[in-house]
Amino acid sequence: MNYIKTGLLLAALTMLFVWIGGYFGGQSGATFALIFALMMNFGAYWFSDRIVLSMYSAKEVEPQEVPELYNIVRELTSHAKLPMPKIYIAPQSCPNAFATGRNPKHSAVCVTQGILNLLNREELKGVIAHELSHIKNRDTLIMTVAATIAGAITMLRWLAIFGGRGGRNRDSNALMYLVMFILAPIAAMLIQLAISRSREYAADKRAAHVAGTPAGLASALLKLEKGVKTYPMKANETTAHLFIVNPLRGQGLAALFSTHPPIQERVKRLQTMNP
Image 1 (tube, rainbow, N blue to C red):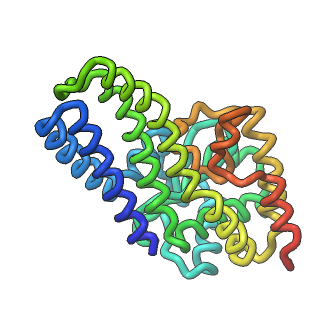
Image 2 (spheres, helix red, strand yellow; image 1 turned 90 degrees about the vertical axis):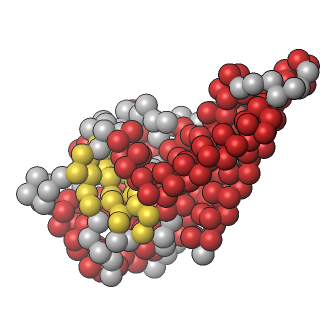
């Protein structure tokens, strides 16, 4: 099902790019936009995980470098009946984690240095179980592709500025520029919003079973909520939905587009589960 959703997402964004290209550049603009969209789709499917990992300077680590973390991941992947993912550590002080990859055989779990410093073993197990649940549920493909596409959507604003007129009058172009500046980032957020909230609840639920108890994850979420406020991350907004907790400080209107359910609601649901 996630492969179908990913395909539909890529197709919809391709049509959007072609329409925008045609509007500003006529037939040549539409052709260029189509080529660009196809290249973007190819890159999003095959390389989006590497792109996201590189954005946060994450480095792959060997078992001997992080034996406790490696043992946790190995234990939980065995319990979840998953292949062993690659393990990455990002140098940020902000405590957070995410999973990426196009399928379970090509997956990775990334944790920040901050989360390793903050959580105890049971809490870290809960977080890793949550990320493995995203892999098990095959969420990582659509979530990572959406991050790449969302970034591309925000680029449309600059295409609107530097694109050709395509025979349109000045007033029409001025209106379209305004629409693009308003709608492009909102569209990116809506894509993330559509794929994230229900998936976080589902991953929390599965994580409790994989880890053997909901207590570790519930405790970890409360610590992480405080941790991201104490050590804010300079995260790209188009990738915020990948993390176990939102690394951005959503206030006011931004909170309406939060890519994550409220921490308190997630903890409440975990606490009502049978251990």
